[in-house]
Image 1 (cartoon, rainbow over the protein chains, first blue to last red):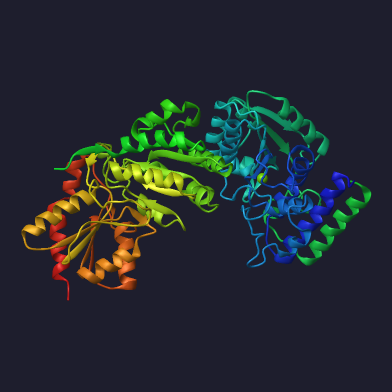
Image 2: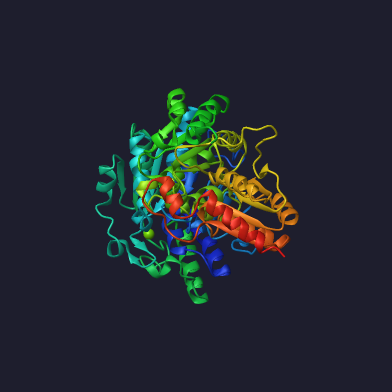
Length: 274
Length: 314
Ligand SMILES: [Mg+2]
């Protein structure tokens, strides 16, 4: 079986192709969240592309909807639609549009207006509880979107209802479109803030490391009576040296020379098993 | 005067009744269950009621998540805070994905009286009508409110229901009345002009028509409980058969019922359309009746508008 690390490189190459061929997308966040998505879709969640409507399935919401290219690549990899359809990303009239929508197999909710996802997750977790199902609900948020007040309304509600089946992840890459999150609107002490809202906050020092992510999700799963948030310290643009840690790659589109350089780095990493 | 009945109470009682029939139905309040009158539902189905506190945006998002898992959520707050504050969640998390969430806005129009303009939402119909594909309704009395609630619960898809406050006149208890989403009701026939009204202005329109009858004018009154999708056939028939239309609503004349009717008449059968309502202004703090009087939302002012429309007929 393909190693997850190898898969992460291969899917980053697909994302690079999608973004470069259509000259649009949010590659920096796609690359920072790639390991989180793969850990959830390959190791954590109870989902089956053959039974996408199974009531007992786990739910995933990409609250940072702009980083949808990575999700498309992961969903294709998991068999929700053919990988060839990735070439139709942003094709006029196609279904792989610039933000998630529930017409795409495997996508539960329409997101992109930031600050909505955690509320949606609270609703899904409550619905599962009403049904007596063991489904877990996973919500991936960007760090920039945590400035939205509705996130904290939902955070309050999730702990009020003791939703231990709800697990949020923050793609803590430290950057948003206009710069560093700490310069734009300070989030720290982020873990303390979640804890003060009644959450089990789990810091992951390297949020692009599968072993660390796996340990965090295991801890979240075993925590009862309150929701968990995995604060995954990732690197925006991870995997491509000149993109890493630079806000300009929030939605930058690589020029041809940059595309070749990026592809070269990703292919080398895949070869070397990095 | 007709008998008075609280439409909000009728809504709450109907929810409790529907709760037994529809196991997926859930109810969400944002600290204002005393206003939405959901107590009968809470009493019978406490495990299916959520008082999320004062966080309307989260409430709508939570409802969307529940609907995505097959629940039928009714979310309740003042119209100002559902249609107004949670607009983004309604648009992007409910209507765009086509989820089965019923948004209800209480104390709409001027009915929040002395709370003043911050709480008097005179633009909720316009906001909700502008959301692509949204169904927008407003009952004229308690009976219609109950029927509307049941129809909304049993129809797949999102909708907005605009509710007022306090007792309203019972006007729909007559032979031949029936409720169907998207089908306006002719409350009285007439050939000289037609008043198309929604909500509590239906009762006002009936009184205006009675005043005008004494002056020899035969005025049709239509209860347009569904503002969107509007009953185009009924509007066109009124334009063709009476030649003069007046709309009446406790709402801005922009974007609500007046806008909807003018759009249909302008496109299909142009005749004068005069819009009776709030003339693009905020309300004012005061007893509901005093505020209605101040802004001319009375039968006598409405009767005057009808006469003006008749005078404009070719
Ligand atoms: Mg970020």
